Length: 296
Image (cartoon, rainbow, N blue to C red):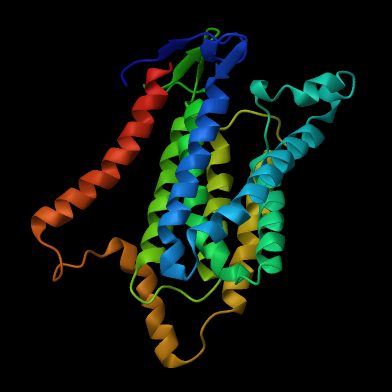
């Protein structure tokens, strides 16, 4: 993308109207993200000993709780903007969701639903981790396009102001997290129950802390609310990973397997096979970035 891209914002973006019903870009991207994330979870379900029906039964309440939690979290963080206009609470098409609020509520609902059905909650969370990352990568296509002011060649211009295309950065980070989680989830032998999800939390929180430098929004002691939440999540997950580390010499040596996502298996795949896999992964990221670029 050469040069600053011109853009003017006039409220929620409507991509199509069907009678009195409007399809908003934000809502459509979020729905597509939910579908993509659920598809990833279903693809892993059998590997982790779950039937597709079990995953679907847990996903439904988790999704509803996640939407409610994300909205409530955002409203609480921006309460001065809503206290005199309570009707705005229900205008979901305008956006306004706090990811970590939705993550906490959705995971609580998923854990409760899984527990009632006698499912292994830690294994279920491992199954959901890659899909959470993929869903967020897809959902960022519909996010507000601007971040903090910046003069990078790929900046977007909104109302005459040059801004970093923060969602594009977030798409790259979330898709990269999906790649790492998927490779960990599908490597031979897998990982111990719950460790994959903790790794997801640690990496996501760290990414939120770093990416927040380019995000728009109010700062609290120098950081956005998402950065503070990401810091807390990464610290908690990191402590739990450390507390549950393997202690024997053999298990410590086995920790090197965490590098496996980055090491090709040269013995079991042909050069053509490796090229196809690499192209598929890269193509998915380029497609999301192209969709984000097309909306500008």
